[in-house]
Image 1 (cartoon, one colour):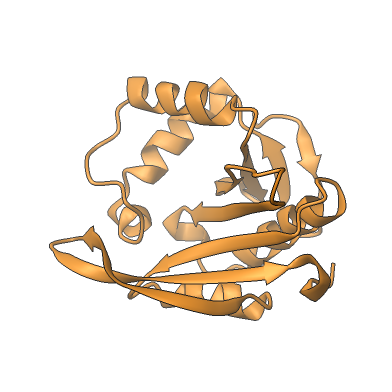
Image 2: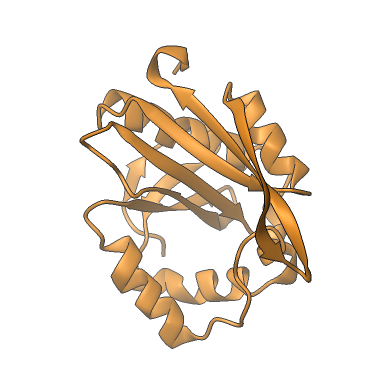
Length: 176
């Protein structure tokens, strides 16, 4: 059973990540359809998933939440590291393959971005997209993020160097 609802939504809820969720997370992140646009390059076993939980989920400068849709857990969304001095953070998200195209990414991102601006008093949210991940580019553009930069050949994924696209939205540009 997923953790407590932290940010409720109409189509998804963002819940705390609990140790009971680690089996789902490990299975999903090892799926080639999920990791193809991530920097995961090796299989992650249960111990590594637990280490991620201990290092990332319990961190005081990051927020990591479970995206829960109609049929249960669908993926994760994270914000961090949160730079309170400068008022910014990076947003990252992934969904299990069977939940792609359902609008869960948009709904989850809207919830966490609104929370970041309204409750955390952040000023800027950033996101990065590896070349070839059109779904993520469309997500950030749909949400009003500006395409700010291309870092040429900045990531090595699946046997080749790829550009990394940088997106951002400012609090005064965001309509919650």
